Length: 113
Image (cartoon, rainbow, N blue to C red; front, side, top):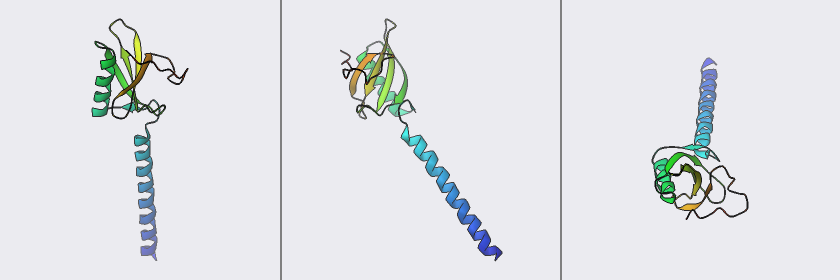
């Protein structure tokens, strides 16, 4: 009987471990609005965002999920003003607006020039 009990405990432990791994993966992949993006995707997003404001300095990249945007990047322009640049999954610029404004506001997100 102890062999059967050991097998049950081992199976329960395995199921628990798989559940924890699955939950962790879902959290890491989901991103959502505001989740930090790093690595090559962040590098591509920064390069695309700075193209909207030549000479600007790109800040952290965040995951976006609204309005077809996949990434959001705050760019500080040479004159010190901030610009919020939204990009799609292929790093194409969807629009830009002065930093600190909600992208869903009046439906016009600006074209960044």
